[in-house]
Amino acid sequence: MIEEGEDGERHRDGEGRHDRVQRQELGQAEAVFAEHGTYDEKATSRRVRGVGSIIEIWQGWAKAFPDSKGTFISEYASGETAIIEVVWKGVHTGVLQTPTGTIPPSNKRIELPACQVIKVAGGKIESFTQYFDMVTLLTQIGAFKG
Image (cartoon, rainbow, N blue to C red):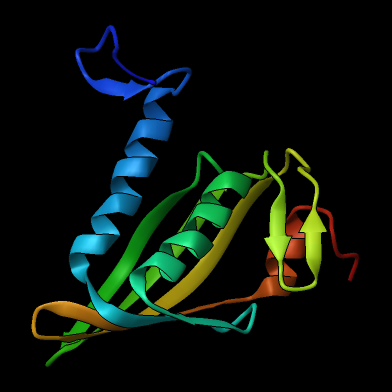
């Protein structure tokens, strides 16, 4: 059910401000991605086409790390290509779905450097490739002992 909250914003029952912001941000992906854009996540070997599939993967990350924030360290652009160095921070409080199975919440904090390569055509994102080290992530949440 949709209701108006104390903050004057309309939101779903039981939904906190962070949930609303996250839902809004994921919804914005539809506006910036080309209909058949691709997302390639090198660390997990997941490659999907279409904004719906992209949002589905991102929702999985948002559920596992609901407080996650990305901090841009540096950005570079040339023509229709942008490269962004980002550090993801958050706490693993939700189930993390990986290509090999699920990892229960560890309640451990992550600080994960990543690099994104984004290619644009006609004002829309055609491809978005994300690089990060999965071993670093799994070690930080206690799922991998190196």
